[in-house]
Amino acid sequence: MSEFVQNFIDGDFIPSTAKDFFNVINPATDKLIAKTPMGGSADVELAVKKAQAAFESWKDLPVIDRVQPLFKLKALLEQNCEEISTLIVKEHGKTFKEAMGDILRGIQMVEVACGMPSMMMGEGQANIAAGIDCTTTRRPMGVFAAITPFNFPAMVPFWFWPFAVASGNTFVLKPSERVPMTQMKIFELISQCGFPKGVINMVHGGAEVVNALCDHPQIKGLSFVGSTPIAKHVYTRGGGNGKRVQALGGAKNFMVMLPDAEIDQSVKAMVDSSYGCAGERCLAGSVLIGVGEAYPKLKDQILKEVQNVVVGDGLDRKTTLGPVISAEAKARITKDITSAVAEGAELLVDGRNTTVAGYEDGYFMGPTVLDKIKPGTLMATKEIFGPVIGLMHLETLEEAIEMINSSNYANTTSLFTNNGGAARKFIANVSPSMVGVNLGVPAPMAFFSFGGSKDSFFGDIKAHGNSSIEFFTEKHTAMIRWYESGIEQAVSPMWSESN
Ligand code: NAD
Image (cartoon, rainbow, N blue to C red; front, side, top):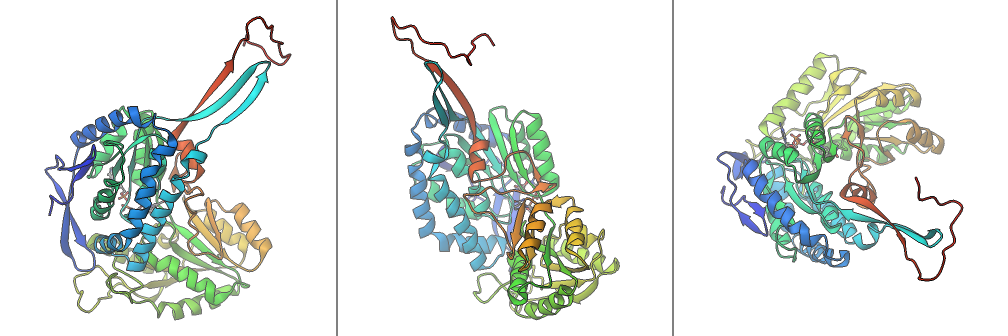
Protein backbone atom coordinates (compact mmCIF):
# COMPACT_ATOMS: atom_id res chain seq x y z
CA MET A 1 0.00 0.00 0.00
CA SER A 2 2.83 2.39 0.84
CA GLU A 3 4.53 1.44 -2.47
CA PHE A 4 1.54 2.94 -4.26
CA VAL A 5 2.12 6.47 -2.98
CA GLN A 6 5.44 7.56 -4.43
CA ASN A 7 7.23 10.74 -5.32
CA PHE A 8 7.28 11.82 -8.95
CA ILE A 9 10.71 13.17 -9.81
CA ASP A 10 12.41 13.68 -13.17
CA GLY A 11 9.56 12.08 -15.09
CA ASP A 12 9.25 8.89 -13.02
CA PHE A 13 7.48 7.61 -9.92
CA ILE A 14 10.18 6.77 -7.39
CA PRO A 15 10.04 5.66 -3.74
CA SER A 16 10.41 8.32 -1.07
CA THR A 17 13.28 8.14 1.44
CA ALA A 18 10.62 8.29 4.20
CA LYS A 19 10.80 6.05 7.25
CA ASP A 20 7.44 7.27 8.58
CA PHE A 21 4.07 6.99 6.88
CA PHE A 22 0.76 8.80 7.35
CA ASN A 23 -2.30 6.55 7.37
CA VAL A 24 -4.85 7.65 4.78
CA ILE A 25 -8.28 6.60 6.02
CA ASN A 26 -11.56 6.56 4.10
CA PRO A 27 -13.61 8.90 6.33
CA ALA A 28 -16.87 7.13 5.45
CA THR A 29 -15.63 3.71 6.58
CA ASP A 30 -12.64 4.31 8.91
CA LYS A 31 -10.68 1.84 6.73
CA LEU A 32 -7.01 2.31 5.86
CA ILE A 33 -6.72 2.91 2.09
CA ALA A 34 -3.15 4.17 1.58
CA LYS A 35 -0.03 5.24 3.40
CA THR A 36 1.64 8.54 2.55
CA PRO A 37 5.42 8.56 2.84
CA MET A 38 6.46 11.44 5.10
CA GLY A 39 9.58 12.41 3.19
CA GLY A 40 12.28 14.85 4.13
CA SER A 41 14.99 17.16 2.86
CA ALA A 42 16.70 14.45 0.77
CA ASP A 43 13.51 14.08 -1.33
CA VAL A 44 13.24 17.86 -1.72
CA GLU A 45 16.92 18.10 -2.63
CA LEU A 46 16.55 15.56 -5.44
CA ALA A 47 13.32 17.08 -6.79
CA VAL A 48 14.75 20.63 -6.82
CA LYS A 49 17.98 19.45 -8.44
CA LYS A 50 16.05 17.83 -11.27
CA ALA A 51 13.65 20.78 -11.58
CA GLN A 52 16.59 23.20 -11.76
CA ALA A 53 18.27 21.10 -14.46
CA ALA A 54 15.02 20.96 -16.45
CA PHE A 55 14.57 24.74 -16.14
CA GLU A 56 17.70 25.42 -18.18
CA SER A 57 16.10 24.16 -21.41
CA TRP A 58 12.36 24.49 -20.54
CA LYS A 59 12.67 28.27 -20.16
CA ASP A 60 14.00 28.56 -23.70
CA LEU A 61 11.26 26.49 -25.31
CA PRO A 62 8.82 28.86 -27.06
CA VAL A 63 5.71 29.43 -24.97
CA ILE A 64 3.51 28.05 -27.76
CA ASP A 65 5.37 24.73 -27.39
CA ARG A 66 5.29 24.81 -23.60
CA VAL A 67 1.47 24.83 -23.53
CA GLN A 68 1.04 21.80 -25.83
CA PRO A 69 1.31 19.23 -22.98
CA LEU A 70 -1.40 21.18 -21.11
CA PHE A 71 -3.84 20.71 -23.99
CA LYS A 72 -3.18 16.96 -23.77
CA LEU A 73 -3.62 17.04 -20.00
CA LYS A 74 -6.99 18.78 -20.29
CA ALA A 75 -8.26 16.00 -22.59
CA LEU A 76 -6.88 13.25 -20.31
CA LEU A 77 -8.38 14.85 -17.19
CA GLU A 78 -11.77 14.98 -18.89
CA GLN A 79 -11.53 11.34 -19.91
CA ASN A 80 -10.56 10.33 -16.36
CA CYS A 81 -12.67 12.69 -14.26
CA GLU A 82 -15.03 9.97 -12.95
CA GLU A 83 -12.12 7.86 -11.74
CA ILE A 84 -10.41 10.89 -10.17
CA SER A 85 -13.70 11.92 -8.51
CA THR A 86 -14.10 8.45 -7.03
CA LEU A 87 -10.60 8.69 -5.53
CA ILE A 88 -11.44 12.13 -4.10
CA VAL A 89 -14.58 10.75 -2.45
CA LYS A 90 -12.67 7.79 -0.98
CA GLU A 91 -9.84 9.76 0.55
CA HIS A 92 -11.64 13.04 1.34
CA GLY A 93 -15.26 12.09 1.94
CA LYS A 94 -17.04 14.78 -0.10
CA THR A 95 -19.94 13.75 -2.33
CA PHE A 96 -19.35 12.48 -5.87
CA LYS A 97 -20.96 15.63 -7.31
CA GLU A 98 -18.71 17.85 -5.18
CA ALA A 99 -15.70 15.77 -6.26
CA MET A 100 -16.65 16.29 -9.93
CA GLY A 101 -16.76 20.04 -9.19
CA ASP A 102 -13.30 19.79 -7.59
CA ILE A 103 -11.77 18.29 -10.75
CA LEU A 104 -13.81 20.49 -13.11
CA ARG A 105 -12.45 23.64 -11.45
CA GLY A 106 -8.96 22.15 -11.80
CA ILE A 107 -9.48 21.52 -15.51
CA GLN A 108 -10.52 25.16 -15.93
CA MET A 109 -7.12 26.23 -14.53
CA VAL A 110 -5.38 24.07 -17.15
CA GLU A 111 -7.58 25.59 -19.89
CA VAL A 112 -6.73 29.13 -18.86
CA ALA A 113 -3.00 28.35 -18.57
CA CYS A 114 -3.16 27.10 -22.19
CA GLY A 115 -3.61 30.79 -23.06
CA MET A 116 -0.13 31.60 -21.77
CA PRO A 117 1.15 32.79 -25.19
CA SER A 118 -1.07 35.85 -24.87
CA MET A 119 -1.27 35.96 -21.05
CA MET A 120 2.44 36.54 -20.57
CA MET A 121 2.88 39.12 -23.32
CA GLY A 122 4.86 42.14 -22.32
CA GLU A 123 4.61 45.72 -23.44
CA GLY A 124 6.64 47.90 -25.75
CA GLN A 125 6.94 51.34 -27.24
CA ALA A 126 8.85 52.33 -30.33
CA ASN A 127 10.83 55.56 -30.37
CA ILE A 128 10.63 56.38 -26.65
CA ALA A 129 13.42 58.81 -27.43
CA ALA A 130 14.86 59.61 -30.84
CA GLY A 131 15.88 56.27 -32.37
CA ILE A 132 15.37 54.28 -29.17
CA ASP A 133 12.82 51.49 -28.67
CA CYS A 134 11.82 49.93 -25.36
CA THR A 135 10.29 46.52 -24.59
CA THR A 136 9.30 44.84 -21.35
CA THR A 137 9.06 41.06 -21.51
CA ARG A 138 8.19 38.58 -18.76
CA ARG A 139 10.77 35.99 -17.87
CA PRO A 140 10.38 32.77 -15.93
CA MET A 141 12.47 32.69 -12.76
CA GLY A 142 13.38 29.07 -11.98
CA VAL A 143 11.92 26.49 -9.61
CA PHE A 144 8.63 27.19 -7.82
CA ALA A 145 6.82 24.99 -5.28
CA ALA A 146 3.30 24.66 -3.86
CA ILE A 147 2.09 23.20 -0.57
CA THR A 148 -1.60 22.34 -0.65
CA PRO A 149 -4.40 21.42 1.81
CA PHE A 150 -6.64 18.38 2.07
CA ASN A 151 -9.96 19.99 1.23
CA PHE A 152 -9.68 20.26 -2.58
CA PRO A 153 -7.38 17.36 -3.47
CA ALA A 154 -7.62 17.97 -7.23
CA MET A 155 -8.29 21.69 -7.71
CA VAL A 156 -5.90 23.56 -5.42
CA PRO A 157 -2.61 22.24 -6.93
CA PHE A 158 -3.96 23.38 -10.33
CA TRP A 159 -4.26 26.95 -9.00
CA PHE A 160 -0.51 27.17 -9.35
CA TRP A 161 1.57 24.72 -11.33
CA PRO A 162 -0.04 25.00 -14.83
CA PHE A 163 0.54 28.78 -14.76
CA ALA A 164 4.08 28.42 -13.39
CA VAL A 165 5.09 25.77 -15.89
CA ALA A 166 3.42 27.35 -18.93
CA SER A 167 5.25 30.60 -18.17
CA GLY A 168 8.57 28.71 -18.29
CA ASN A 169 9.32 27.75 -14.69
CA THR A 170 9.69 24.25 -13.30
CA PHE A 171 7.80 22.97 -10.29
CA VAL A 172 7.67 20.85 -7.14
CA LEU A 173 4.26 20.06 -5.61
CA LYS A 174 3.73 18.86 -2.06
CA PRO A 175 0.11 17.73 -1.73
CA SER A 176 -1.61 17.19 1.61
CA GLU A 177 -0.55 13.93 3.21
CA ARG A 178 -4.25 13.27 3.91
CA VAL A 179 -5.22 13.00 0.22
CA PRO A 180 -2.29 11.63 -1.83
CA MET A 181 -4.23 9.30 -4.14
CA THR A 182 -5.91 11.99 -6.24
CA GLN A 183 -2.55 13.51 -7.15
CA MET A 184 -1.04 10.05 -7.79
CA LYS A 185 -3.69 9.55 -10.49
CA ILE A 186 -3.27 13.09 -11.84
CA PHE A 187 0.52 12.66 -12.04
CA GLU A 188 0.02 9.38 -13.91
CA LEU A 189 -1.84 11.49 -16.50
CA ILE A 190 0.78 14.28 -16.38
CA SER A 191 3.43 11.68 -17.21
CA GLN A 192 1.61 10.91 -20.48
CA CYS A 193 1.46 14.50 -21.76
CA GLY A 194 4.97 15.09 -23.07
CA PHE A 195 6.41 17.38 -20.39
CA PRO A 196 10.21 17.00 -20.43
CA LYS A 197 11.63 15.17 -17.40
CA GLY A 198 11.96 17.33 -14.29
CA VAL A 199 9.54 20.07 -15.35
CA ILE A 200 6.84 18.99 -12.90
CA ASN A 201 7.66 16.98 -9.76
CA MET A 202 5.85 15.83 -6.64
CA VAL A 203 7.22 15.12 -3.16
CA HIS A 204 5.01 13.66 -0.42
CA GLY A 205 5.33 14.55 3.24
CA GLY A 206 4.47 17.02 5.98
CA ALA A 207 6.30 19.69 7.99
CA GLU A 208 9.79 18.41 7.19
CA VAL A 209 9.23 18.65 3.44
CA VAL A 210 7.51 22.04 3.83
CA ASN A 211 10.43 23.44 5.83
CA ALA A 212 12.95 22.06 3.34
CA LEU A 213 11.03 23.82 0.54
CA CYS A 214 11.00 27.08 2.54
CA ASP A 215 14.77 26.83 3.05
CA HIS A 216 15.99 25.55 -0.31
CA PRO A 217 18.16 28.24 -1.93
CA GLN A 218 17.19 27.28 -5.49
CA ILE A 219 13.43 27.67 -4.95
CA LYS A 220 12.37 31.10 -6.17
CA GLY A 221 8.83 31.16 -4.85
CA LEU A 222 6.28 29.29 -2.76
CA SER A 223 2.52 29.05 -3.00
CA PHE A 224 0.79 27.81 0.14
CA VAL A 225 -2.85 27.02 0.86
CA GLY A 226 -3.96 25.81 4.29
CA SER A 227 -4.65 26.96 7.82
CA THR A 228 -3.65 30.43 9.02
CA PRO A 229 -0.88 29.41 11.48
CA ILE A 230 0.93 27.36 8.83
CA ALA A 231 0.32 30.05 6.18
CA LYS A 232 2.02 32.57 8.49
CA HIS A 233 4.86 30.12 9.13
CA VAL A 234 5.49 29.51 5.41
CA TYR A 235 5.21 33.23 4.63
CA THR A 236 7.71 34.13 7.35
CA ARG A 237 10.17 31.29 6.76
CA GLY A 238 10.05 31.33 2.95
CA GLY A 239 9.97 35.14 2.81
CA GLY A 240 12.85 35.32 5.29
CA ASN A 241 14.85 33.22 2.85
CA GLY A 242 14.22 35.76 0.09
CA LYS A 243 11.50 33.90 -1.78
CA ARG A 244 8.31 35.21 -3.28
CA VAL A 245 5.50 33.79 -1.13
CA GLN A 246 1.73 33.77 -1.55
CA ALA A 247 0.13 32.05 1.46
CA LEU A 248 -3.63 31.56 1.56
CA GLY A 249 -4.95 30.86 5.06
CA GLY A 250 -8.12 30.05 6.96
CA ALA A 251 -11.48 31.79 6.96
CA LYS A 252 -14.58 32.79 8.89
CA ASN A 253 -17.26 33.71 6.40
CA PHE A 254 -20.37 35.78 7.14
CA MET A 255 -23.44 35.87 4.93
CA VAL A 256 -26.02 38.59 5.29
CA MET A 257 -29.69 38.49 4.31
CA LEU A 258 -31.72 41.69 3.96
CA PRO A 259 -35.54 41.69 4.28
CA ASP A 260 -36.01 42.16 0.51
CA ALA A 261 -33.99 39.07 -0.49
CA GLU A 262 -35.49 36.17 -2.48
CA ILE A 263 -35.96 33.97 0.55
CA ASP A 264 -36.12 30.44 -0.96
CA GLN A 265 -33.23 30.81 -3.37
CA SER A 266 -31.08 32.76 -0.89
CA VAL A 267 -31.47 30.16 1.84
CA LYS A 268 -30.77 27.29 -0.58
CA ALA A 269 -27.53 29.04 -1.59
CA MET A 270 -26.59 29.66 2.06
CA VAL A 271 -27.27 26.04 3.07
CA ASP A 272 -25.25 24.70 0.10
CA SER A 273 -22.44 27.04 1.03
CA SER A 274 -22.41 26.04 4.71
CA TYR A 275 -22.91 22.27 4.43
CA GLY A 276 -21.35 21.62 1.00
CA CYS A 277 -18.08 19.66 1.29
CA ALA A 278 -19.16 19.16 4.94
CA GLY A 279 -18.30 22.81 5.60
CA GLU A 280 -14.63 22.02 4.87
CA ARG A 281 -14.29 24.82 2.37
CA CYS A 282 -12.47 28.13 2.74
CA LEU A 283 -15.49 29.85 1.16
CA ALA A 284 -18.07 28.05 3.34
CA GLY A 285 -20.78 30.15 4.95
CA SER A 286 -20.44 29.99 8.73
CA VAL A 287 -22.39 32.81 10.40
CA LEU A 288 -25.65 33.77 8.67
CA ILE A 289 -26.86 37.22 9.65
CA GLY A 290 -30.54 38.10 9.28
CA VAL A 291 -30.96 41.87 9.20
CA GLY A 292 -34.14 43.22 10.85
CA GLU A 293 -37.24 41.39 9.61
CA ALA A 294 -35.11 39.03 7.50
CA TYR A 295 -34.02 37.18 10.64
CA PRO A 296 -37.19 35.21 11.50
CA LYS A 297 -37.71 34.36 7.79
CA LEU A 298 -34.09 33.20 7.50
CA LYS A 299 -34.39 31.06 10.62
CA ASP A 300 -37.66 29.37 9.53
CA GLN A 301 -36.41 28.67 6.03
CA ILE A 302 -33.05 27.30 7.26
CA LEU A 303 -34.91 24.88 9.53
CA LYS A 304 -36.97 23.71 6.52
CA GLU A 305 -33.95 23.37 4.21
CA VAL A 306 -31.94 21.41 6.77
CA GLN A 307 -34.53 18.66 6.54
CA ASN A 308 -33.49 18.04 2.91
CA VAL A 309 -29.86 17.32 3.84
CA VAL A 310 -28.99 13.64 3.26
CA VAL A 311 -25.98 12.44 5.29
CA GLY A 312 -24.06 9.45 3.93
CA ASP A 313 -21.17 8.02 1.97
CA GLY A 314 -20.20 10.40 -0.83
CA LEU A 315 -20.27 7.56 -3.34
CA ASP A 316 -24.02 7.17 -2.78
CA ARG A 317 -25.48 9.63 -5.34
CA LYS A 318 -28.34 10.54 -2.93
CA THR A 319 -25.89 11.89 -0.32
CA THR A 320 -25.68 15.67 0.02
CA LEU A 321 -23.47 15.74 3.16
CA GLY A 322 -20.48 13.40 3.40
CA PRO A 323 -18.30 12.73 6.45
CA VAL A 324 -15.68 15.15 7.79
CA ILE A 325 -12.05 14.32 7.08
CA SER A 326 -10.99 12.55 10.30
CA ALA A 327 -11.99 11.35 13.74
CA GLU A 328 -9.96 14.29 15.17
CA ALA A 329 -11.89 16.77 13.00
CA LYS A 330 -15.19 15.30 14.20
CA ALA A 331 -14.05 15.56 17.84
CA ARG A 332 -12.87 19.16 17.33
CA ILE A 333 -16.14 20.29 15.67
CA THR A 334 -18.21 18.48 18.32
CA LYS A 335 -16.26 20.30 21.03
CA ASP A 336 -16.77 23.66 19.27
CA ILE A 337 -20.54 23.09 19.14
CA THR A 338 -20.55 22.22 22.84
CA SER A 339 -18.48 25.31 23.67
CA ALA A 340 -20.79 27.53 21.60
CA VAL A 341 -23.77 26.25 23.57
CA ALA A 342 -21.92 26.85 26.84
CA GLU A 343 -21.38 30.46 25.66
CA GLY A 344 -25.14 30.95 25.21
CA ALA A 345 -25.89 29.78 21.66
CA GLU A 346 -29.20 27.95 21.27
CA LEU A 347 -28.91 24.55 19.62
CA LEU A 348 -31.78 24.29 17.08
CA VAL A 349 -30.44 21.30 15.16
CA ASP A 350 -27.77 19.03 16.66
CA GLY A 351 -25.58 17.09 14.20
CA ARG A 352 -23.16 15.73 16.80
CA ASN A 353 -24.47 12.22 17.26
CA THR A 354 -25.42 11.41 13.69
CA THR A 355 -24.73 7.90 12.44
CA VAL A 356 -25.27 6.33 9.02
CA ALA A 357 -26.61 2.77 8.81
CA GLY A 358 -23.97 0.44 7.42
CA TYR A 359 -21.24 3.06 8.04
CA GLU A 360 -21.21 3.11 11.82
CA ASP A 361 -17.44 3.78 11.98
CA GLY A 362 -17.52 6.76 9.58
CA TYR A 363 -16.82 10.35 10.69
CA PHE A 364 -20.32 11.61 9.92
CA MET A 365 -21.84 14.73 11.39
CA GLY A 366 -25.34 15.86 10.66
CA PRO A 367 -26.09 19.51 9.88
CA THR A 368 -25.99 21.69 12.99
CA VAL A 369 -27.84 24.98 13.45
CA LEU A 370 -26.93 27.26 16.35
CA ASP A 371 -29.04 30.34 17.03
CA LYS A 372 -28.48 33.58 18.95
CA ILE A 373 -24.79 33.88 18.05
CA LYS A 374 -23.27 36.94 19.69
CA PRO A 375 -20.29 38.98 18.44
CA GLY A 376 -17.02 38.01 20.10
CA THR A 377 -18.07 34.44 20.93
CA LEU A 378 -16.33 31.31 19.61
CA MET A 379 -18.91 30.75 16.86
CA ALA A 380 -18.52 34.35 15.66
CA THR A 381 -14.72 34.29 15.59
CA LYS A 382 -13.28 30.78 15.10
CA GLU A 383 -13.01 28.84 11.84
CA ILE A 384 -15.14 25.73 12.53
CA PHE A 385 -14.48 23.92 9.19
CA GLY A 386 -17.45 21.61 9.66
CA PRO A 387 -21.18 21.49 8.82
CA VAL A 388 -22.29 24.10 11.35
CA ILE A 389 -24.45 27.19 10.79
CA GLY A 390 -24.59 30.00 13.35
CA LEU A 391 -27.55 32.41 13.11
CA MET A 392 -27.16 36.02 14.18
CA HIS A 393 -29.73 38.81 14.35
CA LEU A 394 -28.61 42.39 13.66
CA GLU A 395 -30.73 45.46 13.01
CA THR A 396 -28.96 47.18 10.12
CA LEU A 397 -26.73 46.55 7.13
CA GLU A 398 -24.15 48.87 8.73
CA GLU A 399 -24.04 46.67 11.85
CA ALA A 400 -23.57 43.60 9.63
CA ILE A 401 -20.67 45.25 7.80
CA GLU A 402 -19.11 46.20 11.15
CA MET A 403 -19.49 42.59 12.34
CA ILE A 404 -17.80 41.23 9.20
CA ASN A 405 -14.96 43.75 9.45
CA SER A 406 -14.33 42.93 13.13
CA SER A 407 -13.13 39.44 12.14
CA ASN A 408 -9.41 38.69 11.90
CA TYR A 409 -10.22 36.67 8.79
CA ALA A 410 -11.33 38.24 5.51
CA ASN A 411 -11.69 35.55 2.88
CA THR A 412 -15.22 35.93 1.55
CA THR A 413 -18.66 37.28 2.40
CA SER A 414 -22.03 37.50 0.63
CA LEU A 415 -25.06 39.72 0.71
CA PHE A 416 -28.52 38.46 -0.24
CA THR A 417 -30.75 41.29 -1.40
CA ASN A 418 -32.65 42.80 -4.32
CA ASN A 419 -31.45 46.29 -3.43
CA GLY A 420 -28.65 47.48 -5.75
CA GLY A 421 -27.73 50.40 -3.52
CA ALA A 422 -27.32 48.14 -0.49
CA ALA A 423 -25.23 45.70 -2.54
CA ARG A 424 -23.02 48.53 -3.76
CA LYS A 425 -22.46 49.79 -0.23
CA PHE A 426 -21.70 46.24 0.97
CA ILE A 427 -19.15 45.59 -1.80
CA ALA A 428 -17.42 48.90 -1.16
CA ASN A 429 -17.14 48.53 2.62
CA VAL A 430 -16.48 44.91 3.59
CA SER A 431 -12.90 43.79 4.21
CA PRO A 432 -13.00 40.30 2.61
CA SER A 433 -11.59 40.57 -0.88
CA MET A 434 -13.88 37.97 -2.47
CA VAL A 435 -17.45 39.26 -2.25
CA GLY A 436 -20.72 37.74 -3.45
CA VAL A 437 -24.13 39.19 -4.11
CA ASN A 438 -26.88 36.54 -4.02
CA LEU A 439 -24.18 33.85 -4.25
CA GLY A 440 -23.32 31.26 -1.62
CA VAL A 441 -19.81 30.43 -2.85
CA PRO A 442 -18.36 33.44 -4.69
CA ALA A 443 -15.23 31.63 -5.89
CA PRO A 444 -13.46 33.61 -8.61
CA MET A 445 -13.00 31.47 -11.72
CA ALA A 446 -9.62 30.50 -13.18
CA PHE A 447 -9.34 33.67 -15.29
CA PHE A 448 -9.81 35.96 -12.24
CA SER A 449 -7.60 36.19 -9.17
CA PHE A 450 -8.32 34.29 -5.96
CA GLY A 451 -7.37 35.18 -2.40
CA GLY A 452 -8.61 36.90 0.73
CA SER A 453 -7.04 39.49 2.98
CA LYS A 454 -6.12 40.00 6.67
CA ASP A 455 -5.37 36.60 8.30
CA SER A 456 -6.78 34.78 5.27
CA PHE A 457 -3.90 35.82 3.02
CA PHE A 458 -0.22 36.59 3.47
CA GLY A 459 1.64 38.08 0.53
CA ASP A 460 1.09 40.62 -2.21
CA ILE A 461 0.05 38.66 -5.26
CA LYS A 462 -3.07 36.48 -5.35
CA ALA A 463 -3.59 33.10 -7.02
CA HIS A 464 -4.46 32.28 -10.64
CA GLY A 465 -5.85 34.59 -13.35
CA ASN A 466 -3.55 37.43 -14.33
CA SER A 467 -2.08 37.47 -10.82
CA SER A 468 -0.30 34.22 -11.65
CA ILE A 469 1.72 36.03 -14.30
CA GLU A 470 2.83 38.60 -11.74
CA PHE A 471 3.80 35.87 -9.30
CA PHE A 472 5.57 33.46 -11.63
CA THR A 473 7.48 35.89 -13.85
CA GLU A 474 9.89 38.76 -13.56
CA LYS A 475 9.66 41.84 -15.78
CA HIS A 476 12.65 42.45 -17.97
CA THR A 477 13.07 45.74 -19.80
CA ALA A 478 15.35 46.35 -22.76
CA MET A 479 16.09 49.73 -24.33
CA ILE A 480 17.52 49.48 -27.78
CA ARG A 481 19.22 51.93 -30.11
CA TRP A 482 20.68 51.13 -33.54
CA TYR A 483 23.04 53.60 -35.12
CA GLU A 484 22.82 54.13 -38.83
CA SER A 485 26.27 54.87 -40.12
CA GLY A 486 26.71 58.35 -41.40
CA ILE A 487 23.36 59.58 -40.06
CA GLU A 488 23.37 61.92 -37.11
CA GLN A 489 20.36 61.09 -34.88
CA ALA A 490 18.23 63.83 -33.49
CA VAL A 491 18.21 64.04 -29.71
CA SER A 492 14.86 64.24 -27.98
CA PRO A 493 14.64 67.18 -25.54
CA MET A 494 13.03 64.78 -23.00
CA TRP A 495 15.95 62.29 -23.12
CA SER A 496 19.05 62.31 -21.01
CA GLU A 497 21.69 59.58 -20.73
CA SER A 498 23.37 61.19 -17.77
CA ASN A 499 20.94 60.08 -15.02
P1 NAD B 1 -3.07 22.59 7.13
O1 NAD B 1 -2.55 23.95 7.39
O2 NAD B 1 -3.13 21.62 8.24
O3 NAD B 1 -2.17 21.86 5.99
C1 NAD B 1 -1.87 22.51 4.78
C2 NAD B 1 -0.50 22.05 4.31
O4 NAD B 1 0.48 22.41 5.29
C3 NAD B 1 -0.41 20.54 4.13
O5 NAD B 1 0.25 20.25 2.93
C4 NAD B 1 0.37 20.06 5.34
O6 NAD B 1 1.19 18.94 5.08
C5 NAD B 1 1.24 21.27 5.69
N1 NAD B 1 1.50 21.36 7.13
C6 NAD B 1 0.68 20.97 8.14
N2 NAD B 1 1.25 21.22 9.34
C7 NAD B 1 2.45 21.80 9.07
C8 NAD B 1 3.49 22.31 9.90
N3 NAD B 1 3.43 22.25 11.24
N4 NAD B 1 4.57 22.84 9.30
C9 NAD B 1 4.66 22.90 7.96
N5 NAD B 1 3.70 22.43 7.13
C10 NAD B 1 2.60 21.90 7.67
O7 NAD B 1 -4.48 22.77 6.42
P2 NAD B 1 -5.55 21.66 6.03
O8 NAD B 1 -6.17 21.14 7.28
O9 NAD B 1 -4.96 20.70 5.07
O10 NAD B 1 -6.60 22.53 5.22
C11 NAD B 1 -7.64 23.26 5.83
C12 NAD B 1 -7.30 24.72 5.98
O11 NAD B 1 -6.96 25.26 4.70
C13 NAD B 1 -8.48 25.56 6.48
O12 NAD B 1 -8.02 26.49 7.42
C14 NAD B 1 -8.98 26.26 5.21
O13 NAD B 1 -9.65 27.47 5.43
C15 NAD B 1 -7.69 26.47 4.50
N6 NAD B 1 -7.90 26.69 3.07
C16 NAD B 1 -7.79 27.96 2.61
C17 NAD B 1 -8.03 28.23 1.27
C18 NAD B 1 -7.93 29.64 0.77
O14 NAD B 1 -8.07 29.85 -0.43
N7 NAD B 1 -7.70 30.64 1.61
C19 NAD B 1 -8.38 27.20 0.40
C20 NAD B 1 -8.47 25.90 0.90
C21 NAD B 1 -8.23 25.66 2.25
